[in-house]
Image (cartoon, rainbow, N blue to C red; front, side):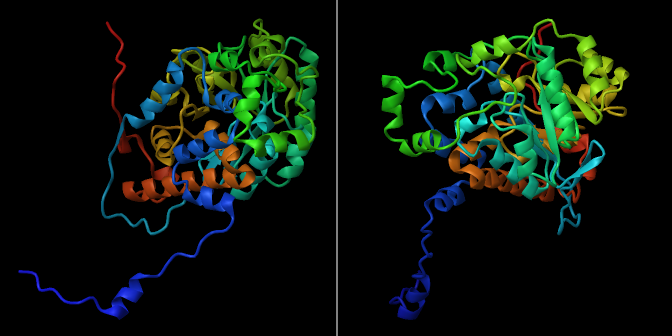
Length: 410
């Protein structure tokens, strides 16, 4: 039988300690975001549909992206016990330099369309966190302005080889002159993938006002105010910006790109070179034989060939074949710090985040990008402590099992 009594007023008063309200609306909504998916939900509310769908969407049926994310969920961790993890070191060595965290910011195109601070927010946040930032050929901030935003950090440049080779060569020279230390040569985009959300939304660069966009803008006046009252979009390379995203890509990309182009670019570039968009073991081995500095396993975030291989699934075999000679990185589908830890355990030297960064950008500009980095950092540290490893170097394949769903038929 429970013995009851009248509540003690003193004890009751101790329970009635209300949390001081946060008057800053941006800080309030970002602090409430505990996961990258929370940031995605905020981004969707605050961004016009066409711009959000350009970021969130993928090619055709979006199967590649869904499978990549599912692959990270289909893992089983194997923790150790009774290890001292009072402190955890997330620092990693990548391409001869240091990154405070085992991930960097991936190259993204048309970034100022998502939120007006664009690449400046990304580069500044990356510099503050001590991680690399990658500028896209199709970025909306110049090479020189990114360097100014991240003067002491590591800046990388992602290169498309375009039909007009002189444009690409000029970008290589500008990035080198600005002190960018790594070139990310992209090889999975001979033509644009079929991004159906963009076609259905009539998404163009720059955005065009229609009855639909005006209706969609009514609950998001801040986005249009920022867009209309800040400098005109300027691209890293394109002199013409009219048309749909697919039309722009198809006019810029060249399906004739081959290994000769890689040789030319390598001869021009004084720093490290990473090949982005590798999707099989054979190509990885050929690139390793050519002596490239890094291989990025990526299917372009599912935005090119739908039903493409899952980079996370390719990782163990590619690392086994070339990992001793060439750094192997992975991207596509990373939405949690645990995804990054699993990648490192299976041999990835480094990882890149794209959409996760853009969700934060759309949710709150520079502060939103900072929040993305903080969420992933907290998840990485917590996962490492629960696995009972105190440094990135201690992560091994024994810590992770990839569970199978998609098994090839005989």
